[in-house]
Length: 495
Image 1 (tube, rainbow, N blue to C red):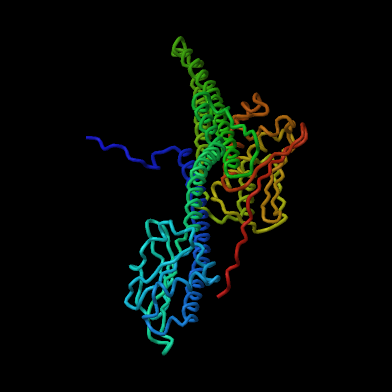
Image 2: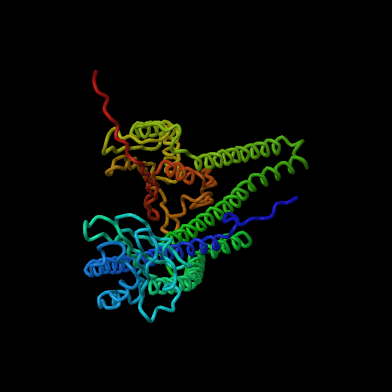
């Protein structure tokens, strides 16, 4: 048996949550503000009525005392009190909308008065004796009678002979007609305005949610288009905003551009790798077919085909190794297996090794600064320098001269290798670090290049937060410069 679904914000859309939240916040603010106003106005009006009732009670007590009706309790009768109340102009004015009740010392009602025009009203005929409190001190009470707020102020009548004995009580009852009318109308108005505020807050919340979520909706649609049609689609904001959603849009577009570039690079890499591998495979296939047809019995053909096949196999082996090195270079971790390496020592070691391997070349090293250290794996730095130096040797032409340089620029280490070979044109200088790119493909075949060396060097240098660039002019010279962050080595203190 399935449980019926209950209301849950978790299962609702973001637009609904935003609309609900904004509406609730706006309505709650209006409700609290209205409640504060309602209570404030009610408290102000009530305090005013309290003063009115208290003043009427004190005036009534003074009038009765001045008329010498407080000699004993027997003088407090309806016949004696009535004329005094009616003849007192001050008291008559205060009874405009109030009720004046007199009680004997036992709490029995003697007489009850109000303005003549109000005699027919229900509050003028009501018996308030149940709210009488027999005590010598004045008392306030605020009961609700027939659903209406009423204020009652009570004062004792004392014997004028000793000014201590209580011979009766006076009650002034204010039915709060105007107060109840005002508060009722105010409450009805607040309910009406509350309903209007709820509707307006709901509409405002919906419009805000729709406005804020439009970029997210566009982003979701763009993602679906990208999933179906590729990485070319972008979010085109109608208005460039500087809020979080605007930043998210820019980050999304930038991420899509990077993914598209990466996808295109991977696609190009596969195509180039397939092309590079196809040539040696075809050569080996041709020689094997040649051997299969008539080379088995011809020692010269057999020897030529085997040598050619071994050469192409060696080229394939080198190409696969370079592709593996490139893949590893893209996965360098900056927090693992790092070493503080003296770049001067590694560069000098590479220079000496190349002098041994290429005796007909002259390798010079200029050091503007000594003992420069970088945070990099020793074998990676050595591999980068070997790749650059090997390229310099391959494309140096007839000059047979290689210049190496190392120095620092503020917090950077600059290492450059310069040859005086054929140079690179301006149109091709930015492409030399692309995978499988060769300036002179025919000549690169002769010197054994696959076009991956500088791509590997670039990935390695970038992995260590460095940079690599090439400078050249056609038929003049080429300089490859790498830049690495300089690490200041702390001197060990002497014991």
